[in-house]
Image 1 (cartoon, rainbow, N blue to C red):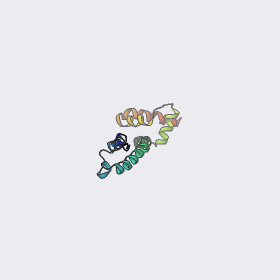
Image 2 (image 1 turned 30 degrees about the horizontal axis):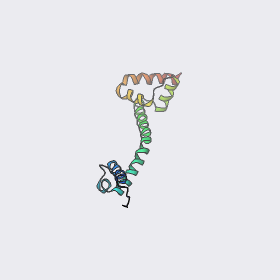
Image 3 (image 1 turned 90 degrees about the vertical axis):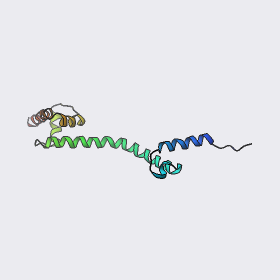
Image 4 (image 1 turned 90 degrees about the horizontal axis):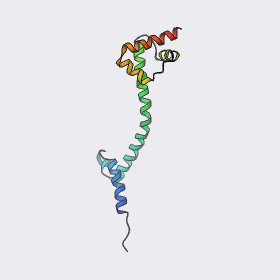
Length: 119
């Protein structure tokens, strides 16, 4: 009786890993063992960074808002506190877009926040 080997199953498993490693540099894209190690690490990084991306963008939006409000003599925390007191519920992404695209609208938001802080 012939010896049973995992012919097609093993080959398909290896092809799947090598397909995921396509474009990797050097032997990491060609040799199965190196490719498997590289793909495992890449998938870990991808999982981790899908979460980190949310943090990074929020930090970017806050930095943009802070720069825009400091140009008019206010701090970020004062601005956000004033908006909360005025019941203006805009997220940081939209606030940063308004600060970049429409300066006069952002000025009005700042005046509203400033008026709420003074009251």
